[in-house]
Amino acid sequence: MTFVWRRAAPVVVPYSRASETGPYVPKTVRLTIGDGRGSGNGNRQNGRLPLGWIVFDDDDVPAQEIYLSHANGVEMLVNARGVVGIVEQMPIAQREMLLARAMGRALAHELGHYLLASKAHTAGGLMKPVLTAVELFSLDSNTLRVEPAQRRVIAARLRGNPLVASR
Image (cartoon, rainbow, N blue to C red):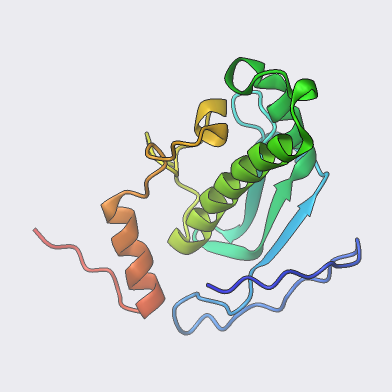
């Protein structure tokens, strides 16, 4: 993956759809970092506003756009006092580092949905439905692994190989 950072106008024009004849691996995924809070129950998990989301056109066709909510990240950081300490007393660099870590992990989760072409969540690891403040802000990321079966699915999709079940 290559990341190209561009500042864009607040009005976003959607990308055209990739061909559906081959593996769904479009060349461009747009990441928007903004202050949107998410809308409707589809973006709310256990009463929490999400740090990020991706829209699916169908059950297994992810859109080419991922959204990360800076506003929700800041709110989560402030509310994670028991994990990170008192945010108002931190140096700016520490606040920004903690926020960047959480946003990066939220992005990794959403990219997981994109690369797996699945809305599904797992019981643990990176793809569980709700990541805790400890998982998002802690220096330790060992609990945020992608399961081996998921890695195989991603690799097969990127190669364009069909997935074959075996015993």
